[in-house]
Length: 451
Ligand SMILES: C[S@@+](CC[C@H](N)C(=O)[O-])C[C@H]1O[C@@H](n2cnc3c(N)ncnc32)[C@H](O)[C@@H]1O
Image (cartoon, rainbow, N blue to C red; front, side):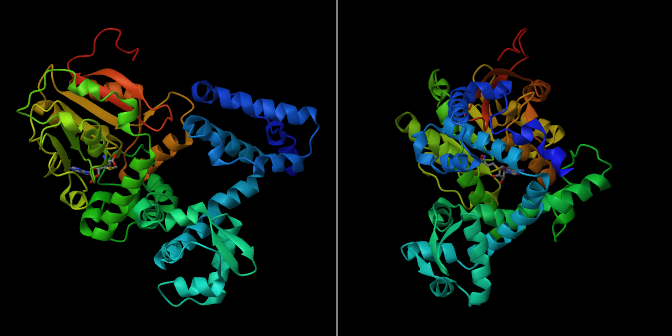
């Protein structure tokens, strides 16, 4: 059986598989470079050891800030690993190793080791010194085992026996301002309930129907308090904080909506100053509205930006309160701010079924001024084929956490037209995380499908 697996042409090949259509747009130059490199190696009849040497030389800095090429290269490298790994190795990694790593990283976060290591200068330290950095007494015989796993996976570096150095990853986890530790904390606080046993058990118990009821989720099935995601965040400030910090860190890292949507569109008409310019609905800590404020500071009168969310999320907001009005609002109820130039929803509708999304959209439509107000939805638009791993994982995670989903362009068109909107343009992020769907009130025009 093993022989049969390795005789599969894809398992043997170190050459990239032909690109699928959606990848072609962003990955073609990289792909060509990778093919050229591998063709050269082939001509030189290099050994597998040389290939490992070549791969060892690549660094994130080599891309000179060219994010599309860096991401496409990561994807090719992952495909390479996927082709080289035996199915047992891949299964081991998914089902065994990843859990051990997550538990170990969470232990380091709990002990404050990364943070204190960074604060102490981030240099090489002995096992004994690492134990002293920890917030609690730790048995060195325990810590050495955890360090071994972290070093074997490049989270820290083992420079000599029981001597360690942090890597860029562990330094980032130790940097409070970067909010990176929130990812590990959120995995522990939230994501485990939307995945693993809970998702498969939930899908079985709901007869393998596509989940669409926010009251009935895999998350709720798994979580100790038997409540849904948002209620659990509202009940426990620490759980709200880990989620809010994760969203903040993720929003900082994703391509900013202001980079691929032309924000001048919102100011290029006669502005009605009796109403706000932009309302960020479900805007969490205010990262997105602050990007708009920074870009158009001079053109924005005091209080003409509005940040809405649940009160528990707004308690952690960090915005310029001269320009931005902080307003608790439940978007499942009528929108109190009328006639704004734009209403923005970033990563909101992917948390909700079509039924609830229609409620939110209809409340928004009722507040909008026809011919003036715009709707901006920043969310994933799934391609018909070849969704990225990020997009597909986000979709299934939304299923597990909230019985919600990501949508294709067709699904967005249907949802928006059902609430009385027509899409004007879909602005695409070249890095393929999300898009900005710009819409206004009105029936879709004939032939408007080609967006
Ligand atoms: C996935 S987060 C996105 C946050 C932010 N827009 C971003 O992209 O970083 C969804 C947001 O919706 C908010 N939310 C959930 N239910 C809500 C409700 N019923 N009314 C208002 N906001 C709600 C959450 O508190 C959270 O901030």
